[in-house]
Length: 176
Image (cartoon, rainbow, N blue to C red; front, side, top):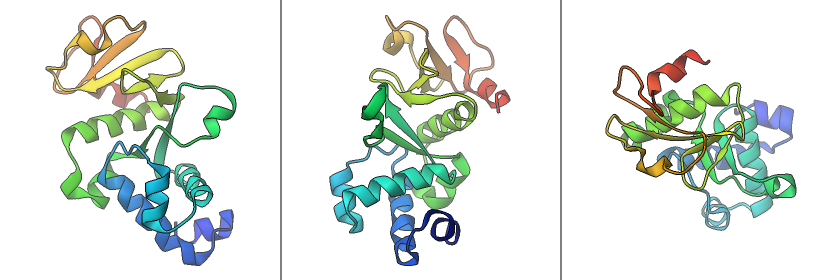
């Protein structure tokens, strides 16, 4: 990142520490729900530059930025949620903040984001390819949260096989 952004994206070398600071802030709260005004004040850069850096972090493969289910110019707005690209980054950058719930969601985003469009859903964790809604959780995650949502599923950790709309989380590892 230290050389790629300045060389390929025209980022001033002096701003690389700001981008590293941004990545560290994101890593502490996965999924990160950005408040652009507060974040730009905290890092000391303007809103437009921050939005550009958020885009660059996704472009270089360090984050997965989920947009709201919207079309057109609304997509140019801030991401609804930001995930680190994979669980290794999460455990490397903020090991004390890494939890099993964060790891589950990051794993799911990494595995499905490779070949599918992921976006934010108001009632579940992920909206995949503008068709499927997924809620991520452990073996005790109930169907209550996806009740009444068409094409919705639970991706559950700590189960060996699925039943009805509950799919073992580990199976998504075969999609990559």
